[in-house]
Length: 330
Image (spheres, rainbow, N blue to C red):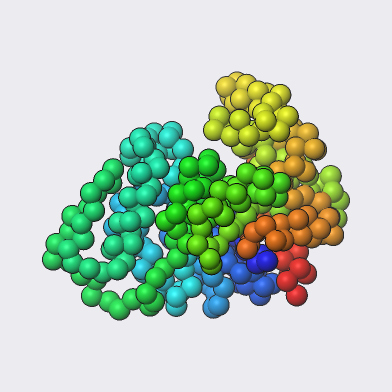
């Protein structure tokens, strides 16, 4: 099983240093998220800082850019990385698309299907390029005048609900889990959907916030805000409620309405909820938790805790995460 890393850096220089350290530790792929930084720009920085590790957007927002621009980003990043790039896309939620980026969100499933189809058509380099759907493109007289590094750039889709998971298996080369994806949920709910549709070689990437510390209580405290943040998001309430954490989601939503920052709700999250949705503990405990994904996922994307933490604490957490990767992959 591959161990991937989503590196963190307060500056781009620190991010590049973390990428080199993760590569040296044996990480398989480095993933660039899109929230406080641009995913393609971050991926470019990771590519330039490393030599052999895979580089991926995880995830780039599928609707905030035109499919053609996304395809051009992917082609440029594949060239920049020497054929190491993977394009990870996700829809985001309605509020993020409509309020933050001013783009439509209606019919997200066919919109994402069309997005992937258009990206594939642009990367294939034909003339004309014509696709009609929820998202459409009509291009004549255009060809990319630069040679492609390889015939096909892998596309990964993030999905939480069953329809999006099935779409990933239907049209993509891999699936990316939400950051809170325990092995039991992967086994019982997600894999049956993927296995019904995915072709051989389909890459299943689980994900987890991984907080490592010699003191388990410190490790849990650092991860608590990550779980608390998602507990406050309405889209995930059903999952948490079904697992018996309805009181936490209600308290988190109330705290958010009262003006509490979304990334500072860790005090509302009990230890059993942290243990259920994050990997947090000593190096030995975290290594044992990682083994629970073996045989279920092809890779686990690990990210250090950062929500509501001062940079110096996230820095320590990331160093210990990369040490863990090195100890497990060596």
